[in-house]
Structure formats: structure tokens, C-alpha cells
Image (cartoon, rainbow, N blue to C red; front, side, top):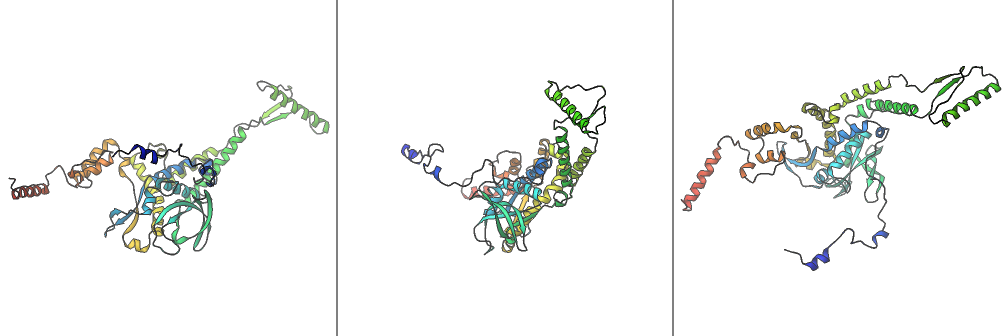
Length: 413
């Protein structure tokens, strides 16, 4: 039904035209020139190549779907539960982050700090009073202090726009420790040693490119008296003025003077140590250079997902399952599960063969295969049935006979 012109004028709204004149005088909270809740790397991680490694791992962790589900009596997936927790994991974790952005935030913070807290900021009931509550919003928090039954965390408060320190009970805060802590976060781990070597390399490069000549001038006389020192100092200033005042930086010296330049490239094995530690770190994390540049084959990616991504996502999911699902909820077959799409790494030329095998062996329906390759589902009811279309089905004959019997009863035949 077409909306009347008067009603359209009455209810119309425009972001630029419909401005509240009193809004500019209201206290809207703190403002920043950058996003205040964004995770920030610390301890030198933001100035090294490990940032790209962390970001790659966090992106792959966030690409895995996590859902609040219900299982059957055999522990198999039955249905997705429409809850606030599932909404946080799949759609909107908080006012500023989607479910996927929240998981990326959690993974990056976990790799950077070694141990993080996932805080249910908004719940339907007070977690300190009852365990029967539903999670409405989630935030990643940094753990500041550890107590026997509590933790002090620093979490972003979206109402004030500030990061605040609060004391929370461990019973309803998901505390996740990095399963790769010994490799990444230990003080003398491979990652920390690599960061220190990279810092030394940066210092050496800055000193080499500082613009100083680092010259030693050998004068033709012995400098032992004050008069000789004054004469040598005047000679040094003279050479400095010649170099700074010359267009091309050229100076002249006496034939009896010798000049030695010190800012030559240093012969050390620092770069070899960095290359060795990088290779060692990649092997311990299960990462190769082909994974970072996107040229890895299916077997390499499968090894990467099994050795690197799966432990991280399992640590996050298992802790949320332990803290956000009560014993009663688990007895009701509620669970938190994660799924990875196995078809993302399959090349196009193999899709047809896989689709034929999956449908012929009644593993997937035709519409499920069409969804994988990005096609709209078919309206044919047969496309939603687990049947082998290459052979005749007994149910077809039974349906045909029942249809004929029904037509006979109705007097149509």
C-alpha cells in the first residue's frame, strides 16, 4: 500500500536535516581521534614482523564459525540455539564489534599478552547471584592482577568510552591462556629472542644511517701539550667546515695526514641469527612462508589449521563452554561448537567430483552443494532429500502408486 504524502512528511527522517538543536550541548562522553577499544600491541610486537604473523593467525581463527548449539543423545549436532550468547558469537558481540571482529580481537590479544579474559559485560541476571543467565554482550579484557577466586581486568566500558579496571569473580569470566605460550610469550622463548634480535638490527641500522661520518684524523705530530691539542681541535673544525660548507661534501687534507672512516658495514652474524630464529619460529608454530603469502597447497593449510589454529580456537571455545554454560545447561545437551568450512581450500576443478561423491553417497543434498558453490537453492523438493539421483528410488514407486490410488478414490481415473 502506498504511503500518503502527508504521512511521509510526518515520519520522514534525514541524518543531516533532522538535527536536535540541544544535542550539541549534551555530554556525549569522551572522544578520540582513533578507536579506543582497538587492541594495541605491546612489548615491541608492534615494531617487528611478528605483527603480520599474529594478524594472519587471528584472521584465520576469526574465520571459523562458533555457535551455541543443542546436541542429540549421541552428542551430535541437532540445532542452533537462538540465544544471546549465540548472537554474540555469530552476529554482534557488543556495540562496537561484530562476532567475527570480536574473535579476531580475542585471538590477537591472546597472542600478544599470553592470557586474556573474556568478560560478559551485559547479562540477563546477576552472575554473582545465579548461574541461570544469558550473555548479551562480550568484551576482551586484559588481566592486571590475579587473586585466588577473582581477577582484576581492564575492559572497555562503552557507556563512558574509557577502559576501566574492575574486580570480577573467576566463575563467570572466561580466562583463556595461549596454548603456544612457551613459544610466543615466555621471557626467553623463540619469539622473544627474535624480537630482541630485530631490535638490535634496528639500532644498528639507525646508527649506520645517522648521517655522521665517524672519521679519525691522524695528524703528523704528537698531541701531548695543550698547544698541540688546540692546534688539532682547530684542524678538526676546519675539516668540519669544509665538509658542511661544500656543495658536494668535499674537503682537503695535508699529505702527511691520514683519515680513517669508521662507519663501514659491520661484519656480524646478526642477520643470520634472525633468519635462523625466524625459520625456527615458523617450524614451532606450524607456519610456512607460503601460508603468509597465500600460495600454500591444501596439505600445508591442513597442517597449519591442525597444529596452530585448532589449539587456539579450542582453548577459547572450551573456556567459554566451561564458564558460560552451567551444569544444568550441559545436562540439557547445550554446547558451544566451532566449524570450519572444508570447501574453502578446494579448487574449482575438484568441486564437481566432490559434489558427485557426496550426493551419490547421500552425505549432502543437492541444495547444500549448491550453497557451497554460491548458487541459489533449487525449489525442487527432491533437492533437499538425501537420495542418489543416479538410481531409481523405491519411494518414487510407492509415491506413484499412492497417488494413483488417491486418484481412483476421487473418481479421477
